[in-house]
Amino acid sequence: MQKIIPHLWFDKNAEEAVRFYASVFGDVEVGATTRYTEAGFETHNMPAGTVLTIEFSIGGYDFIALNGGPVFKLNPSISFFLNFDPSKDKDAAKKLDALWQKLSEGGKALMPLDKYFFSERYGWIQDRFGVSWQLTLTNPAGDERPFIVPSLLFTGEASGKAEEAMKHYVSVFEGSKVGQVALYPEDTGVQKKGDLMFGDFMIEGQWFAAMDGGDVHGFGFNEAVSLLVACEDQNEIDRFWEKLNGDPSEGQCGWLHDRFGVSWQIAAQGMAQMLNSADRAAADRVMNAMLQMKKIDMAALKSAYQGR
Image 1 (cartoon, one colour):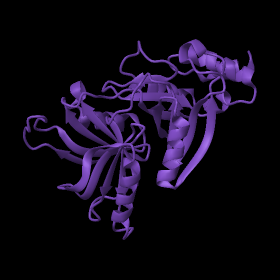
Image 2 (cartoon, rainbow, N blue to C red; image 1 turned 90 degrees about the vertical axis):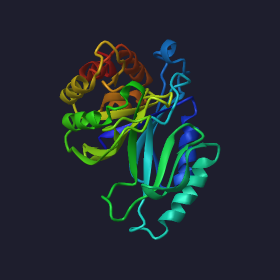
Image 3 (cartoon, rainbow, N blue to C red; image 1 turned 90 degrees about the horizontal axis):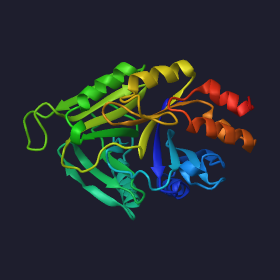
């Protein structure tokens, strides 16, 4: 089971986005859907019954789509590498080009599809919904990586901290290690010598990439892409909340920012089932209880669900 799940914030069009990804990628499975209850309308302004979240997977990699309204805007600070391996598929380059064309419909190229020093075929595209994808033809002689790898771009005040962040995340999570590390050998005007040109790391058995991006981009991490940690029990919730939370005075409903600005959700397995219960009164009570929390309290949510 995937421990860390990218959570994508859409402006009331999550269902449309999931349908789009199903048409683009093909290998998409749609899972559970939760809906807003009457509770908390003054906070979320969503009518009861409106889709709250949709679980979906691309090639077996899990995502969650959220209908959150216009509060947060997607940007390229967190994107997703799509690795096409020519050593495993002789048509890898053709499939990369075909997917690029589909993702480009209504989207915007951030780096055009071309040959670069790091890849024979690469492009960075922001799709029509604002989600960013980096399509790359991998080097068969390089280290093997999965098809989808989330990538963190450290910009603004966080630039120069990508390598530190990798080491921090590896210290927090189990099943972790640092992989590739490529540093800038000299100042470039935007980047400083020693900044991270590219690195990747594994946490909880999942690969992530990281790069420093300088201070010229005009965007940074926000809640539009958060990383949801599905915790098994309260002990895990407490541990990850303490180790990741960069500002204990902030946070709501299990959401937090770490000290680098990355948004996380420290959640618990079973929360979605309670919010999606056929007993709508019980789901309302759970939503009301959750809206009062910073860190998730599973015992309190279960008590609310049971009406105690």
